[in-house]
Image 1 (cartoon, rainbow, N blue to C red):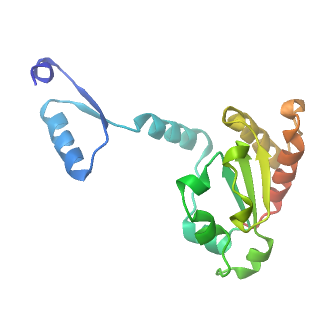
Image 2 (image 1 turned 180 degrees about the vertical axis):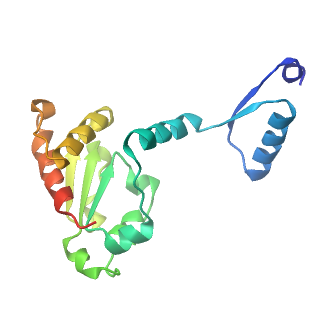
Length: 173
C-alpha cells in the first residue's frame, strides 16, 4: 500500500481472476491513477498487430459445421485442447449445406505428434513441421494462394504446401 501511495502512476498486470476480482482490481487502479494490463496482454497485442497489418477473418462453430468444405488446422493440439471438436463440428453427418460434406477435407500444419489421428473421420492432409517453422510456411502458403511462385527454400514441404494452396483456392468455404 505504501509503494502504491508513493507512486505517481502504477501498472497493475497479471490479473488472472474472475469478474469480481477484476472489478476490485479496476477500482484499485482508478483510486491510485493506475494502468491495467491483462494477464494475456502480450497475446492480445500480437493479435491486434495482426489485425492492423493483415486484417482478421473469423468464423463460428456453426459455420464450420454447416458450410466448410476445407478446414485448415495450424499447430493446434486440437484433440487435446478441444475434445470432441472434430466429432461435433467437423466430421458431421448432417449440415445446412450437406452437399459439401462429401468433399469436406481437413488439413493440418504443425508437429506430426499433434496432428489429428485417423479417427478424425475425414480425409486429412498432414504437412508436418516444427512449431518454429509455422510462420515461415504460412507466409509461403499465403504467397502460393496469391499466385506467387514456390520459393526454393521450402524443401520437402513444398509439394504439400502447393497442394494445400490449390485446395484453398478451390474451396467454397
